[in-house]
Length: 388
Image (cartoon, rainbow, N blue to C red):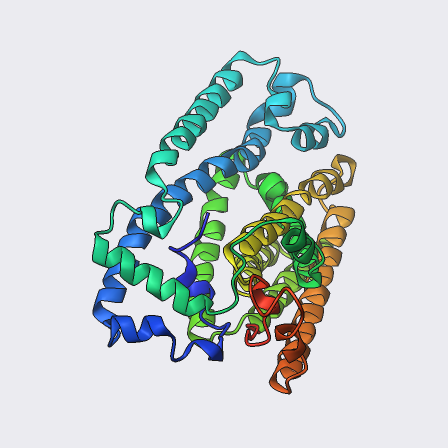
């Protein structure tokens, strides 16, 4: 699916000088900024809510099992030792198979998710040309805008050659490692935040409430980061900033034995806010540096799938017998934060080096290669510049 609704915030930094005087510009004449903003608002209004709903529903089971744990999940199901870790790794439904009430809850959640997924087939437009919420002129304007953004960095045919080009792209795998490191910490908090708060001395009910301002602060930080990074058209510094704040939080939690509860609670804010500075930016950073909708689709899928696999790590490092300090859990999360920062640095240096090489004409030979001619090679086109 061509992500036309998000391109206004994710692809502008990657420029193609070869498209400044395209025939399409002559056809459309002067650019109507008001019309463009109106079209983009309509796209956002029709695309983002349903995508947000799908993501929220898919995230529910990652959150509510942590809340259920401190409300007596282990006691009710006769769980002991690291049974909770196993349940988290295998999925919440595995934990609730012997309890009728939670089963009903999860059936309701599952049916709701399935129903929304089915309905979304008719709510999400696959292509700008098929967007029924736009009129003919608006569709033409949107297609023109996308073509202007993309320029010659196209990959509109998927075959063995283009698939090999995609899978051999180093930056996809480095970005996937970066996201894996960040997501390890993300899932750790999702699964264990209520437990950690309860072990700070809060009651179960108070621990549930205390999670709310932490997530609210992370939400505000995520929005501010998105706005500022888009305005500056820069990503790397925000990934490093998020990792640094995250790391400080984990260092505090590792030293919690000599610290008051308020300081430990503040550390959770640092961890969560650091995660949501870096995590969304990492996804956008890769997507904006992949030319052609097939490459963006496959590359982003690899990154997100790799990040999701971090759940296997996160679910097994908070060992029950190590409560309340969890040195292994916090230590692994801190280490993976360092891995994410290191991968981001490799990505930044590699992209900057590639941009400089292209500025010097070091990739112009690709236009002369037989069978390519700059066609269908995506961001490998020498005119493409990577967002840093």
